[in-house]
Amino acid sequence: MVRGLDSMSYDKRLKVLGLLSHEQRRLRGDLTEAYKILNGKDIVDKATFFQLSPTVSAPDPQTPKNYHTGPQKICAGVSPAC
Image 1 (cartoon, one colour):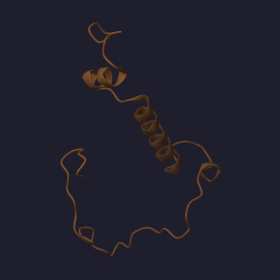
Image 2: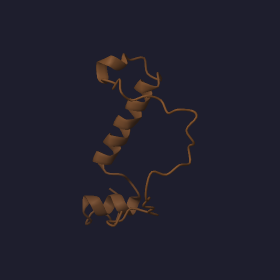
Image 3: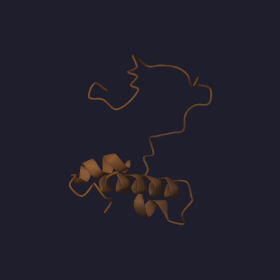
C-alpha cells in the first residue's frame, strides 16, 4: 500500500495513481487479444472464437474517406453530454 492512500476508497486510489480499474484492464486485454486473433498475430483458429458476418465487406476504395453522413458530435473528453 502506498502511504497516505490507505484511508481512500479503491476508486479514489486508482484515480490518484492514474490507474485503470480491473474491469477496464480486462476489457483492454480482451480487445487486444481479439485484435491479435483477427489479424493473425496469434496462432489461433478464428472460427473457434468468432463468427464473422458475411454481409460486412471491405470499404470501396473509390469512396472518399472524408465524407459525412450527418451531423457529428465532437467531444474533447468524457462528459455526460457526449
